[in-house]
Image (cartoon, rainbow, N blue to C red):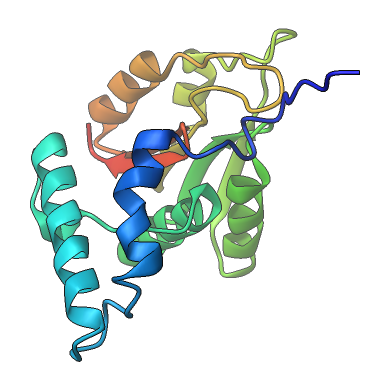
Length: 186
Protein backbone atom coordinates (compact mmCIF):
# COMPACT_ATOMS: atom_id res chain seq x y z
CA UNK A 1 0.00 0.00 0.00
CA UNK A 2 1.34 3.42 -0.94
CA UNK A 3 0.81 6.08 1.69
CA UNK A 4 -0.19 9.66 0.93
CA UNK A 5 0.88 12.43 3.29
CA UNK A 6 -1.91 14.99 3.81
CA UNK A 7 -0.64 16.99 6.79
CA UNK A 8 1.39 19.61 4.92
CA UNK A 9 -0.26 22.26 7.05
CA UNK A 10 1.68 20.95 10.07
CA UNK A 11 4.97 20.02 8.46
CA UNK A 12 6.43 19.59 5.01
CA UNK A 13 9.55 18.35 3.35
CA UNK A 14 12.19 21.00 2.91
CA UNK A 15 12.33 22.19 -0.68
CA UNK A 16 15.56 20.95 -2.30
CA UNK A 17 16.70 24.50 -3.11
CA UNK A 18 16.20 25.53 0.54
CA UNK A 19 18.10 22.47 1.77
CA UNK A 20 20.96 23.35 -0.57
CA UNK A 21 21.16 26.93 0.71
CA UNK A 22 20.92 25.76 4.34
CA UNK A 23 23.49 22.96 4.06
CA UNK A 24 26.55 25.11 4.91
CA UNK A 25 24.82 26.26 8.12
CA UNK A 26 24.22 22.68 9.19
CA UNK A 27 27.76 21.50 8.49
CA UNK A 28 30.24 24.40 8.43
CA UNK A 29 28.74 27.62 9.85
CA UNK A 30 26.94 26.22 12.86
CA UNK A 31 27.97 28.85 15.41
CA UNK A 32 25.52 30.80 17.52
CA UNK A 33 24.84 34.05 15.61
CA UNK A 34 24.51 35.93 18.91
CA UNK A 35 28.16 35.34 19.82
CA UNK A 36 31.17 37.36 18.69
CA UNK A 37 33.67 34.53 18.27
CA UNK A 38 34.90 32.95 15.05
CA UNK A 39 32.16 30.29 14.90
CA UNK A 40 29.31 32.75 15.34
CA UNK A 41 30.40 35.53 12.99
CA UNK A 42 29.56 33.75 9.68
CA UNK A 43 26.14 32.75 11.05
CA UNK A 44 25.52 36.34 12.18
CA UNK A 45 26.50 37.71 8.77
CA UNK A 46 24.11 35.29 7.06
CA UNK A 47 21.36 36.22 9.53
CA UNK A 48 21.80 39.94 8.87
CA UNK A 49 21.90 39.32 5.11
CA UNK A 50 18.63 37.37 5.35
CA UNK A 51 17.02 40.15 7.42
CA UNK A 52 18.02 42.69 4.77
CA UNK A 53 16.64 40.51 1.97
CA UNK A 54 13.30 40.10 3.75
CA UNK A 55 13.18 43.81 4.56
CA UNK A 56 13.83 44.67 0.92
CA UNK A 57 11.06 42.29 -0.12
CA UNK A 58 8.60 43.83 2.36
CA UNK A 59 9.73 47.42 1.93
CA UNK A 60 10.66 47.96 5.57
CA UNK A 61 13.75 48.42 7.71
CA UNK A 62 15.77 45.31 8.66
CA UNK A 63 15.24 46.15 12.35
CA UNK A 64 11.51 45.57 11.78
CA UNK A 65 12.11 41.96 10.68
CA UNK A 66 11.96 39.40 13.47
CA UNK A 67 12.58 35.73 12.76
CA UNK A 68 10.69 33.25 14.91
CA UNK A 69 10.51 29.48 15.12
CA UNK A 70 7.04 29.34 13.58
CA UNK A 71 3.45 30.51 13.59
CA UNK A 72 2.70 29.92 17.27
CA UNK A 73 5.67 31.96 18.45
CA UNK A 74 4.85 34.66 15.91
CA UNK A 75 1.24 34.86 17.04
CA UNK A 76 2.25 35.04 20.71
CA UNK A 77 4.71 37.80 19.91
CA UNK A 78 2.18 39.77 17.85
CA UNK A 79 -0.80 39.55 20.21
CA UNK A 80 1.10 40.09 23.43
CA UNK A 81 3.30 42.76 21.87
CA UNK A 82 0.35 44.82 20.65
CA UNK A 83 -1.49 44.37 23.96
CA UNK A 84 1.43 45.45 26.13
CA UNK A 85 2.39 48.31 23.81
CA UNK A 86 -1.13 49.72 23.52
CA UNK A 87 -2.88 48.81 26.77
CA UNK A 88 -2.93 52.48 27.81
CA UNK A 89 -4.99 53.18 24.66
CA UNK A 90 -7.30 50.20 25.09
CA UNK A 91 -7.47 46.55 26.04
CA UNK A 92 -10.01 45.13 23.58
CA UNK A 93 -9.12 42.50 20.98
CA UNK A 94 -11.47 41.18 18.30
CA UNK A 95 -10.89 37.67 16.98
CA UNK A 96 -13.02 34.74 15.82
CA UNK A 97 -14.29 31.57 17.47
CA UNK A 98 -12.44 29.41 14.94
CA UNK A 99 -8.91 30.70 15.39
CA UNK A 100 -5.92 28.43 15.75
CA UNK A 101 -4.93 27.65 19.37
CA UNK A 102 -1.88 29.88 18.84
CA UNK A 103 -4.35 32.81 18.81
CA UNK A 104 -7.00 31.54 21.24
CA UNK A 105 -4.51 30.58 23.97
CA UNK A 106 -2.67 33.94 24.05
CA UNK A 107 -6.07 35.69 24.04
CA UNK A 108 -7.16 33.63 27.06
CA UNK A 109 -3.86 34.47 28.76
CA UNK A 110 -4.29 38.18 28.04
CA UNK A 111 -7.83 38.05 29.45
CA UNK A 112 -6.28 37.07 32.78
CA UNK A 113 -4.21 40.27 32.54
CA UNK A 114 -7.21 42.49 31.86
CA UNK A 115 -7.76 42.19 28.12
CA UNK A 116 -11.31 42.11 26.87
CA UNK A 117 -11.64 39.72 23.93
CA UNK A 118 -14.62 39.37 21.62
CA UNK A 119 -14.79 36.00 19.84
CA UNK A 120 -16.90 36.61 16.72
CA UNK A 121 -18.86 33.66 15.35
CA UNK A 122 -18.85 32.35 11.80
CA UNK A 123 -21.50 31.11 9.37
CA UNK A 124 -22.14 27.46 8.47
CA UNK A 125 -19.25 27.58 6.00
CA UNK A 126 -16.82 28.79 8.65
CA UNK A 127 -16.65 32.33 7.28
CA UNK A 128 -16.71 35.42 9.46
CA UNK A 129 -18.78 38.40 8.38
CA UNK A 130 -16.84 41.66 8.12
CA UNK A 131 -19.93 43.46 9.44
CA UNK A 132 -19.83 41.25 12.56
CA UNK A 133 -16.18 42.21 13.03
CA UNK A 134 -17.12 45.88 12.70
CA UNK A 135 -20.01 45.51 15.19
CA UNK A 136 -17.57 44.03 17.73
CA UNK A 137 -15.29 47.09 17.65
CA UNK A 138 -15.38 49.41 20.63
CA UNK A 139 -13.45 52.60 21.35
CA UNK A 140 -11.08 50.36 23.37
CA UNK A 141 -10.26 48.02 20.44
CA UNK A 142 -6.54 47.85 19.72
CA UNK A 143 -6.29 44.71 17.58
CA UNK A 144 -8.29 42.58 15.17
CA UNK A 145 -6.91 39.07 14.63
CA UNK A 146 -8.45 36.82 11.98
CA UNK A 147 -6.78 33.86 10.29
CA UNK A 148 -6.63 34.20 6.52
CA UNK A 149 -7.24 30.53 5.71
CA UNK A 150 -8.66 28.05 8.20
CA UNK A 151 -6.15 25.30 8.91
CA UNK A 152 -8.85 22.64 9.37
CA UNK A 153 -11.38 23.22 6.58
CA UNK A 154 -9.62 25.71 4.31
CA UNK A 155 -12.19 28.52 4.44
CA UNK A 156 -10.69 31.74 3.13
CA UNK A 157 -11.66 34.75 5.24
CA UNK A 158 -12.41 38.17 3.69
CA UNK A 159 -9.19 39.71 4.98
CA UNK A 160 -9.19 42.62 2.51
CA UNK A 161 -12.62 43.72 3.75
CA UNK A 162 -11.58 43.27 7.39
CA UNK A 163 -8.38 45.24 6.73
CA UNK A 164 -10.47 48.13 5.34
CA UNK A 165 -12.48 48.13 8.56
CA UNK A 166 -9.29 48.10 10.63
CA UNK A 167 -7.96 51.03 8.64
CA UNK A 168 -11.24 52.94 9.02
CA UNK A 169 -10.94 52.71 12.81
CA UNK A 170 -7.12 52.94 12.92
CA UNK A 171 -6.83 49.50 14.55
CA UNK A 172 -3.97 47.07 14.14
CA UNK A 173 -4.74 43.84 12.29
CA UNK A 174 -3.05 40.46 12.65
CA UNK A 175 -3.67 37.70 10.13
CA UNK A 176 -2.23 34.20 10.16
CA UNK A 177 -1.39 33.48 6.54
CA UNK A 178 0.93 30.65 5.64
CA UNK A 179 2.45 30.81 9.14
CA UNK A 180 3.36 34.49 8.77
CA UNK A 181 1.85 37.01 11.10
CA UNK A 182 1.50 40.48 9.72
CA UNK A 183 0.79 43.21 12.19
CA UNK A 184 0.37 46.82 11.32
CA UNK A 185 -2.11 49.52 10.64
CA UNK A 186 -3.13 48.89 7.05
